[in-house]
Length: 108
Length: 120
Image (cartoon, each protein chain N blue to C red):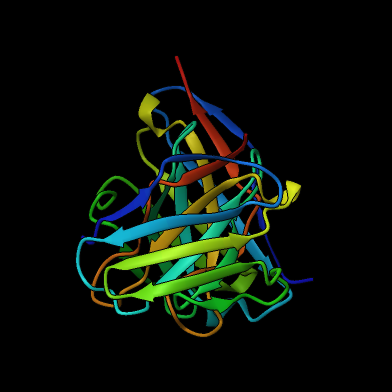
């Protein structure tokens, strides 16, 4: 299986900060990567797919980049509603779907 | 409204069997794969397996193969996840999720989750 490693596991930030989360794959997954946001007690929400395509309705302060084995999720201008845990997920067609371990974005 | 509605929370004892459900509505349920995702308390997301309701083609994660059974009844637009003998370590929230309408293996629609608690 392809292993997905996210860093950091926890991130402390303030409203208005630019935040970057990294996700690394154990082998190349081209651009087959999605990002989800999950708030406590809530359902995961799709933010980005194909590494950089924003899901409909997701604010433009969220952006994704990368290909191959290294990917980033950036939040430009952190808002109070953005404090949550973020997960990456690879969907390379030749391997079972796997998620990263998550990055919790906390209020500094 | 396009949605996946999951069955309610369950409290079971070790060794008991369980089948939880996920009913789709507002879209062509048989046309899109449905996946099951486990989230243990305080932990991350784990894909367990998926089913294509039109023909019940099923894929399992190697980590869950043999431990669970995924099925579907297309006549009532419902997918199921079942265990024959629960363990305390099966305590978790279980989400069903639809594979994206684009045909790629990310999940664009999620159920609200079914909390399963296994305790003696």
